[in-house]
Image (tube, rainbow, N blue to C red; front, side, top):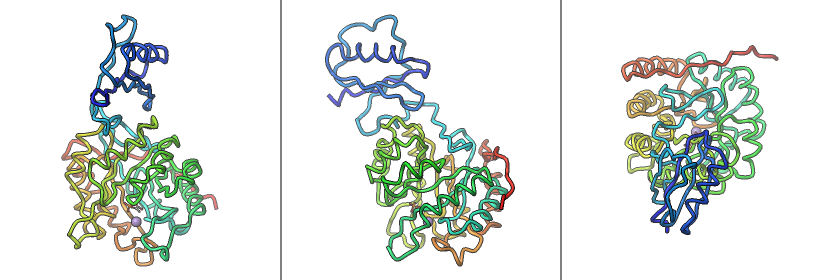
Length: 352
Ligand code: PEP
Ligand code: MN
């Protein structure tokens, strides 16, 4: 049966009664037909040999009928050849412009966050990053400020207008984190935490899925399906480096994967040059390579005092280095016929 799986993709304007008519038609000779509203796109996954008779004239033509292997289904590039734009708050990812999210690895204090967000915003970042819940290798390391950190992110958004991208670690936290965050980050260590993926997919917020550092491209695509099959089409794939024999860098950025994700899926691709390189002087060249390979977005660690950072200070860019990176990216973007995404939200003054 699964050998005959195919997804019927319809125009957003196609309504529920036409979808029901299609389900009836597709199952007229047995098999199954499962409708799913994938973002704004009505789809029907059909199995079996297909309908017994010709299509009733009143049923609308599908935009596409995409055969699937069962592993890459809703993420398959043929589902939406024009690509998907993911909206994290006011920031669009995947519209052709290069969107930069930047900030500290971990939220430490209100002042630190405010200062860093001010700097990255002024330099052209369209969103802030910052972990309140930190997945640490050792339980004795700083674990993040949890709910207090989330409240600081909320406050920083109010002041800056920049949307929040922050990690959710635990399926039990998804609803509460999603109530504040504009985008949910799934960390590399949780890429195959399938219950977390399902919960995040169902939470109604965009999801940035970071590649597990021991996971193949196919495993990333399969993990993305856990989110997509909830009907959530707002998924960004994030390449953040994999573990290889090379130890000169923290991880090895898989640049081919950036291009492969773009070819195999309709989802936008983000690259994290900070966690992959682990060395500030490599962040700029790696970021430039990522953009040249087709990345839609970058995720960059920035810290005002990296030497005293509570998490990953070794890889953070200083504010001045981040400004330089943004200048170089702008020049590269021009050469590629692209541009840096701009900030549209107003900067608000601190209240306290
Ligand atoms: C992060 O971006 O804060 C992070 C923990 O990254 P990763 O999950 O890729 O290690
Ligand atoms: Mn980190």
